[in-house]
Every structure is written in structure tokens, then in C-alpha cells.
Image 1 (cartoon, rainbow, N blue to C red):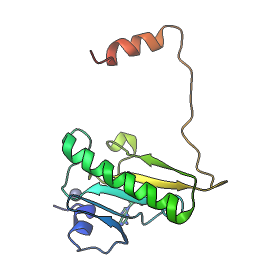
Image 2 (cartoon, protein in one colour; image 1 turned 135 degrees about the vertical axis):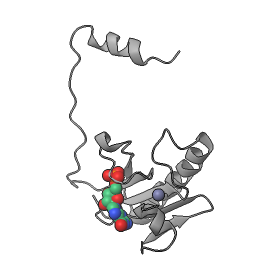
Image 3 (cartoon, helix red, strand yellow; image 1 turned 120 degrees about the horizontal axis):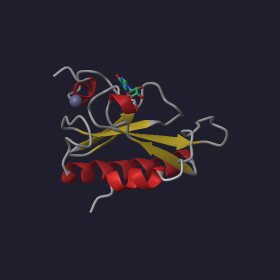
Image 4 (cartoon, rainbow, N blue to C red; image 1 turned 180 degrees about the horizontal axis):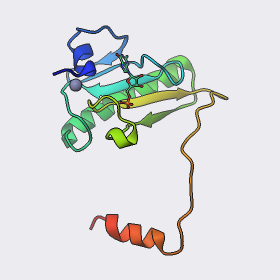
Length: 133
Ligand code: 5GP
Ligand code: ZN
């Protein structure tokens, strides 16, 4: 397995550990968007949301919550973003599911994605395709 995050988890590549429990780990992103940008992930290798089961996801989200709280408590930030790039088209470079927890500072320059508008009837067509009954 040539996964860089698995190698970090096994201790073969160094990382700056923020949090660890039996199933999850969190370490500083090597190229932070803002200071304190942390990656939180399961220790087990799962590529994406489709591969990880609900219990594994719930465990990682508990770790995300702990990390977010530490950023607020210890960096004094008023908020943070939680991102997960699911698959390469969504910007996922490392196929080991991970959540970016990015502390926000006033004027940090991080812009969210652009927003558009639906054409007439387009939202209903999309909704009919994706609605889960
Ligand atoms: P993705 O685009 O897959 O959602 O995000 C991958 C993230 O992993 C990037 O933000 C990148 O900076 C970070 N990263 C890549 N290689 C390493 C590494 O070896 N160590 C650490 N700490 N972060 C890494
Ligand atoms: Zn992995």
C-alpha cells in the first residue's frame, strides 16, 4: 500500500500529531491554508465516503469535533471550516478519506466557492433525480 497517509499512520513518515485515538488520527497539513489547518482521518484505509462504513465515519466525526474545539479553545479562532474532497474531480489528491479542519482568522483571504442561479425548471429536474425517497 503506497498511501502517504497510511505511511504517516504507521510512523514511516513523520507528521505533527494533533490528536489520536484507537480509530482516528489528526495531524497538521504540511501546506496549511491557515495556521492550524489539521487533517483528520480514520487509521484504516478507506478511499472515500462510499468505502467507509457509518460507524467508521461517526468515529472520525467525533475526532473532527474534538479538533475543532481545540482550535477554538487554543487558537482563539471564532470558527473553522470542515471540508472533505470526495474523489479526484472534487480535488481529492490523497485517496485516504480525510477531513480538512481549517481555522478561520479575520481577513485570512480564504474564499468559498462561487454561487450561481438555476434556470427556470432546472432545480426541479435536478431535485427529481437526486431526491431520496
Ligand atoms: P486532498 O486534496 O486530498 O483533500 O488533501 C490532501 C492534503 O494533504 C493537502 O492539503 C496536502 O497539503 C496534504 N499533504 C500531502 N502530503 C502530506 C504529507 O506528507 N504530510 C502532511 N502532513 N500533509 C500532507
Ligand atoms: Zn491510506
